[in-house]
Image 1 (cartoon, each protein chain N blue to C red):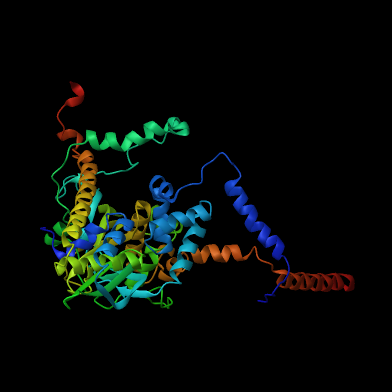
Image 2: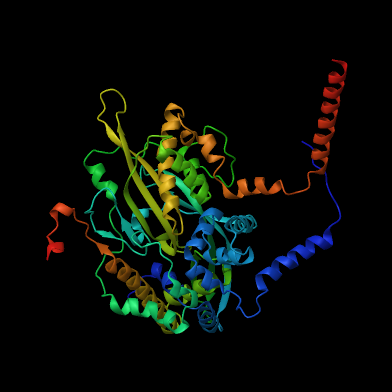
Length: 154
Length: 368
């Protein structure tokens, strides 16, 4: 898989949460999962630089869910996984954190997790492509009347 | 001012809640509105609520619109109430809107801008004629609209983001310098506005202001109670990737994206200090969701308030206190609505005083 670790969450978020939770539960079934911090859902203050003077200000708040886990295999191998999402589902963040650990530690079942990431990335690319189609369909080339070819006279 | 606690009326208040729900559901042949329908088909309404509620949660905004039966003020109020029950987990690092994944991008300053102009989904050039065919829309026809649009539009090789129009003007030395103010941003959700306030407080207040209020203030400036005379250098609508540190690696990762509208206006040029080259003045507007009138109004008011903060206000729209304390929908709606609540004691007092005054007038008339 050529998708870097930092891009796994954004790909997985495209999928149905039930599917992600089910795969995470299956892959961590025989593994000890410990929460480094309890999964949390709350808010984040969105900080922007304004486009005129590049000064900081807050646009508003966004929902944030985050989780951090340590997976310990039967052989005693420990892998850390984490996730932070613009979302209010703490358990979804925890499931993605588990998948993050499975993938980064190449634990058993990581191929299933990889498939999931690739499936999500495909959906993400499709969404981006649709947005580009909106742009392409509405690209405009305004021209001043006196510069225009005499189309109306034809 | 004297208020009085009242009691009684519980059955009526419960009845009012039931009657309100009855009004929503009384046409039994209708289907309950799905939140996704509100979010998609009434997307601009949802956009208003996320921006005026100050919380980017389109699904809850749709729920609030459903619950409050289309009242944007009440829906924004509900979203603010919801947010007040949630813990704040973090403050994002500064996000750069030049990374926005645009779905619309226009300029009224230049016909040719780097990357090109794209109208996107807009009513700008549409005739304001009712489409009567939508009154009884065929579900089958509805379902193929999106499919046909995508099928008939060629794939395009476009970049993820586009350069800012202002960058070109700045490179030419036509704009004021960047980033003189690097103080931390003002958090209007934690600190009250005590004037004078920094520009970041003004921007944050306007970003969650009620659209109509902001427009009214900006319109007063446009019509002549001000001198901004703006040109829209760039108006963009798109999805801003929200970059947050990965909990394990600490590296920035995309945690999600936020639909937002952003507008930069260029206004009348000014000379700074004596000997300085004159440069254009600027205004900036931004809000959650797709709301262009709000972003443009905010940009005009930002420019007007900068003048007011520097030189003192000449017009209401340049007065930070006047503008910022009167544009919040939840505040102003709350004040207007409170007049519906029982004011029996205050009004009794008014009547007593009027009777006394009338008695005195009558008495003085008799003695004259």
